[in-house]
Length: 199
Image (cartoon, rainbow, N blue to C red; front, side):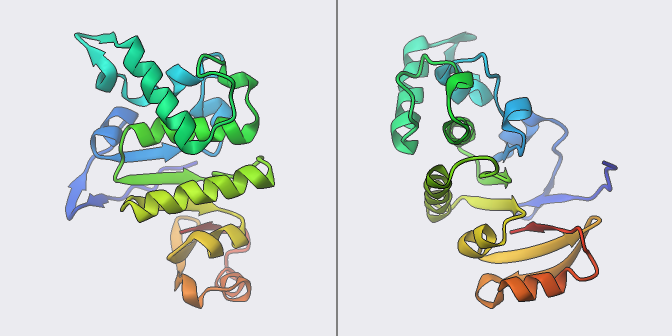
């Protein structure tokens, strides 16, 4: 799509985010809608995938500490209850829900202040969806800022503090979750028939 421009203000100051490394340095993580194309290398192990976004954190003189890499991956495997026999398994062999947990682990490891989740439960089974909802709620309880992009109204209504409807780059409504219901949201989108929902 066309880049419309704009500013990113964090902690009262404008920041420049031209690439992934700059985003990580500014405490921003992004879980892509397309985890197989952009979120994971399906030939990588769970272990390497978990630490991939912040290798310097577990490296000494530019060399990855393999024991620390394993320990970090195990920590997140247990924390997120990722169903995998071992963190040495390739992520390509995991179910969609467990792949998504690995993607979440990867970005949680960077310790972001703000985590952008783009359709985080698309294409995964109901059980994994509810587990991921729990992870999102836990991150929010820890003080992380969560921006959830979703086309599923129940997901937005159940997880959000505030919901924005957006169409063609413009915010068309700003609704506190306690005032939001499907009818109100759909009404706010009447001039934006194909609008996306962001919370």
